[in-house]
Amino acid sequence: MYKKLLISSCVLAAMQVSAEPIKGEAELGLVMTTGNSATENLNTKLKLTKTSGEWLHEANVGALSSSNEDQTTGEDETTAEKYFINYKADRTLDEHSYLYGITTYEDDRFSGFEYQATAGVGYGYKVIAEEDKTLSVEVGPGYRINSIEGASNENEVTLRVGEKFSWKFSENAELNQYLTVEGGEDNTISNLGVGIKSMLNGTLSLRVGIDVKHTENPVGDKDDIDTETYATIGYNF
Image 1: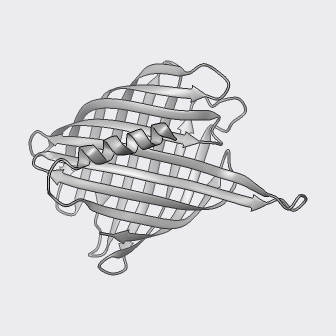
Image 2 (image 1 turned 90 degrees about the vertical axis):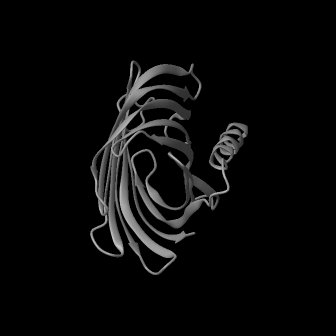
C-alpha cells in the first residue's frame, strides 16, 4: 500500500509542473476475465493527460475487484483483484520524433507475482501523424522487478518495444490499439489491447475492447495468458 501511495504522489507531482489544466477520463464498467481468474467483475480506471510545452504527460490508475458468494459456505470469495498505475512522459524533438520515460506498477493477486514494477526510457517515432490517424513505434532499455510470492525477486534489464495506433474513423468514434513487448533474461511479457471509443455526448463515452497479457514464464501453475474483455462508460473532463 505504501508503494502505491508513493508512486501516486510522484505521478501527481510530475503532472503538476505548470498551471495548464489537466484533462482526464474516469471509467466504470463490466469486465469478463479468463486465465488465472475466471469471472465477471466491476473495474474502475482514471486517465490523466497534460501538455506542457514540448512535454506530454500521461498517467493511468486502475483497480479491478470481484467476489462471489460460495454456495456451500455462504461466504464471499474474492475471485479477482488487481491494481495498477503507470506514468509516461514524452519529450517532443520534432514533428515525428520524441523521447520518453515510463514507469509502471501492477499488483495482481491471481498472477503469482506479489507485484511487478518497471522503469524505462527510449525513443519514439510517429510513422503516421495525421489529424485523424496516428501510428507510433517505440524502443528503449528498461529495468523490471518481478516480486514472486514466497521466492526471491527477479530483477532484470529489459528491452522494451512498443507500438500504438489511433484512428478517428467518424466524428464521434475512434479505434485505439497498442502492443508492448518487454523482454528480459528471466521473462518476456507482452501486452496487446484493442478498443473502440464512442462519444455519447459532450462528456460521456462508451468504450468496448479487449486487453491481453502474455507471460512467457508464468509462476507455478498459473496460465501464461490473461484476457480482460470490457465495456465501460467514461466521463471526460
